[in-house]
Image 1 (cartoon, rainbow, N blue to C red):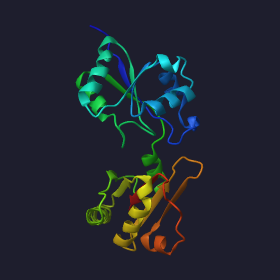
Image 2: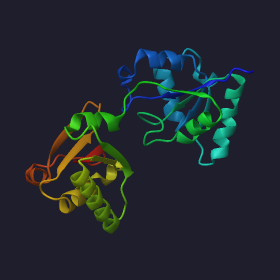
Image 3: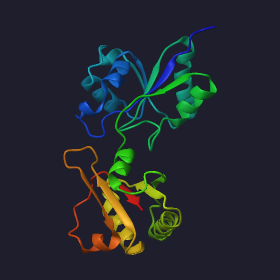
Length: 233
């Protein structure tokens, strides 16, 4: 029976240049891997070079995750020959609000070991710092883009938080932060708690949790084009 390769899930820094957020155990496994399935090749090459990969970057086999799933599966077939493959997303953890789950599912279906490596996740770091219910929480990805549907979804998440106590986490494209915040403050009840975790793990990190009423009274920080995680509790 042939040895199977291992599928490694490699977190990368949330913000460029913060290699100290990646544990040595993760870097050691990264250095032994030569085949990578990545969200964006350019970003992955920068990360691999900064991480001190011992092989010349040009010698590594790097393929971007494709919208056509069968192309990714074809790339992963090398694992049947005993070759390890690593998945790298743009920032944070692959498979968590980032591509990678299709490849991981394929590995499970083909009896290939999957190894998630330790590294930063802005979603979990925001939840840790929110002061909201860490025993029960849900990540909801991105909310609807248009106003009527957005307000409806915000009210639904608030209802879940109130009825069950479950913290509701979501994110938004940075240039839409002002739009989403405007609708949060106009839709949520004054007593509802809202955490905004901005540029988590970055040099200008800002994490603040308070009621909607207090958010309305406070001098509003500039969140425009800054990556944010929002939590309703």
